[in-house]
Image (cartoon, rainbow, N blue to C red; front, side, top):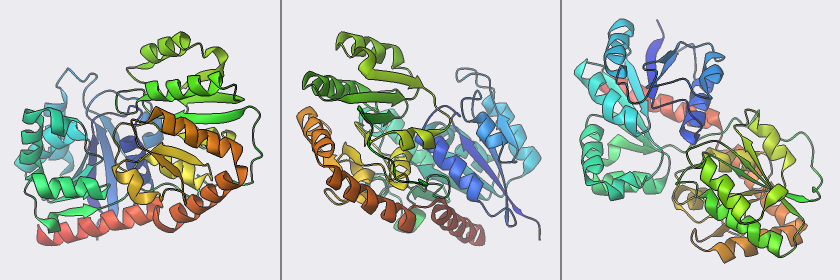
Length: 364
């Protein structure tokens, strides 16, 4: 029997957790049963080579976001490949690619919902179209219980059409080979796209307060994005100088975690962030906001230290606690490491997704 053809479509290959989640999904897919290929709506981005190296067909449908060549090119790709499943990732592909796939008769249309983005609350038209296009889904994978609950309560979807599918991390790759001694100065890491959601301005404000308190700390910020220039200006304004390092896009994120002493996340909203899961797998202590998917997978005081996302003083206090109490930092890191291996591997995520595929195909 020939392999089931699956076409994954994502808005872009720019830096982001959804891209990493898709990479993990394709990497762990059972190639004896499924024949995946991946299309980005526009551009190539930092993940292009990673997808090519997986040995699957990879397509860029338009050179630029504002040039809508992705419409005719996606239609041509679907008609040429005749996928049995189209799996959409992020809002753009959900709103554009999924209706087109339905129009062209793709039997199964799945989408991955990564978080309760501010768009859903601030843009009524966007929320309406999200509801309309989700009505075209054979099934929706929600990466947090809060995201699933939002879809069920606000978009009129039946419970059997939405599954909770937590993101999964490549635990074979993100697995420390030896215990790392503490750095001097103490290295505090931030990882993610430099945009509104990740709120790295707060990260820098926390850095400035710790420097003011004469803590022996170094801050590293890995990522690119639209706020890079403003964040660099803020760092200069706060007098951080060489105490904060902007690393840009770092391909080998594993080494980032291995070289750090603490992951500090300051996001305004999240689903189940891959950065958190990767840090857990690398036995890196975590201070993070008490948000949706983060609060679902981390127990405060047992796996990590969680803070109200608006409380700068709370973040500072919890970071200082882990600087001053190495035994606590070690205990949190060991607990979260055990949890991610037990429940949040990419293999577990993929098997759950493949079960959804099979159920949808049986109904198609």
